[in-house]
View 1 (cartoon, rainbow, N blue to C red):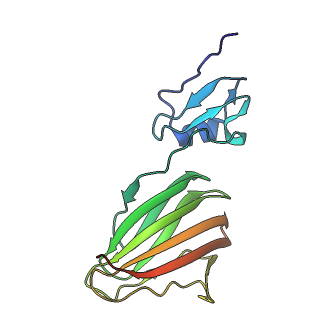
View 2 (cartoon, helix red, strand yellow):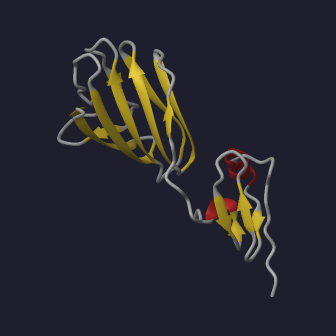
View 3 (cartoon, rainbow, N blue to C red):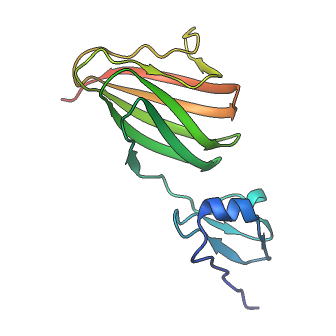
Length: 161
């Protein structure tokens, strides 16, 4: 019995999600930008990722609004250094998306407003109170259920040896 690998060398994960092609039995489809791989049979959006590796830590661009872009229900890691009081926006998330964000204080005392629909652990009321010192590092992790249900945990004041 022979198996055919079906590659999409010019299609990104977002394009595959929008097109939602059928992947035949034992066929393999790979997104060109992320390397995400799925094995058929089934439509791209309905298949689980195969052999998905832990994503690299990306650096987000500081600005009044910091936008973190996802392709559906993927998991991402990122880091941002705050240059002032900022707002975080999540883009492209679908149910099951998750991420870990390292937040570094610039001069210190900056705030990061979370997206609406955020719930923060330990009665945070949707607000993550960050460490305030210059160069302090906090780690925020989330699970996206819907635009009105985003669950956050917060680890404060990470220090090195």
